[in-house]
Length: 386
Length: 131
Image (cartoon, rainbow over all chains, first blue to last red; front, top):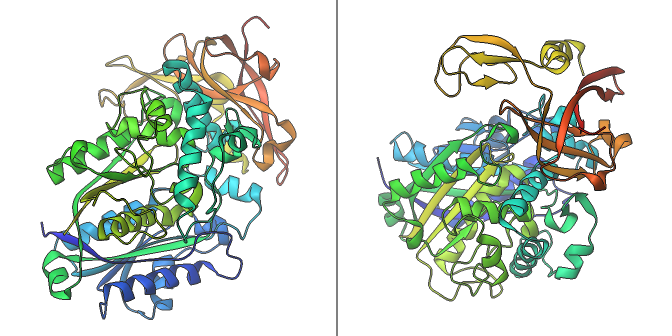
């Protein structure tokens, strides 16, 4: 297997972007990544997107995006794993280079979610759950994560205050991210008086509906060295699946796919969680960040909520989580999210995170965790300064 | 929703038919072609028990379009007496009275109405056992 590096990143501002289409968002991010890398061509492209068909009626994205990127005959594929589509696009690009099939690959992700009503978006996103045995009965995504939250509270005594602390922390980080959809701070009181969506989760526990694109350029470490710019090594990649129906899993308070994907990524990297300095994780809901950080082995089961309250995962904490603002504040264009997580890692590892959110600890190794649905698929990646 | 899609699931939703692995005894609901525990491919038909305990629940206040007229409504996951877990709505009680660990019973109910095709969909819901 060849050693792989990230040499360029680019993304659009996340938000309700009425003036930009699905293809505009993808191409803007892709061009920014190509310019950042300073490459004159790419050999292959992966496009992560969950459900452009339901959101804007457009499929066949690989070809559409290659054409609008001015690369009409480029080899390209679209990959889908619900909200982990972006992470899977990155993984697919990684294997394309590691295997020797291609030398320079663009991994992109995109979702255009606001060309449809709120009901329509809820319906489209619910397609990531079990249509016949969850969605049929009226389950929604906030509802499924709420079921995890209640089970976690019941088993470990996790509190409302702990959930709020995740939202407050991530909005604080996101307030320093110029690409964030909601770059402002929120207070505990604001979180706890916001509209109830699916008890106990309120609107400020939930990531928003977002338009956005994100892209990175990957190549071999040998080519990265010749480009003469700082590069970031991809030292670990892990993917795992689980039952997509929450009720079909043995434990409602652990995300097994996250645990297994992390084990695979750590094994490839020859590292443990103790070697990692910070992480971007899939905080689609506040409870998700708590359960994910426990499933990654960062905290004992039931201890993550307390750690968030103590500030251990804040910007100045011992293990910062979601320095970008996470899905909560930065926004969650589902197909783009996994790639945008990689971009935050690269910025932090290059020392280029904007507006005072750069970690002061000179981070060397970071990790991402990106999951689909209620945890039915998970991608974990570990990156290290080159 | 196309009627054939509902009809295909009717043995599960109307009659609670499940498959029991003839090798390891794992009960799968709905049917599967291969046992997720031992990999065996033969199952015998069993009917799910109709009582169990609620493991977790949530009150849905922002509902998808086909459920907006029912909101707020509760969904929950219950573990039946044979260990099988299901997700369904929790009905016939005030949402504030729902508690983790409460005994529930499965009842046959109308679940949703598809306004586009006008197809009524039936299936199971949990109700408090005392009801």
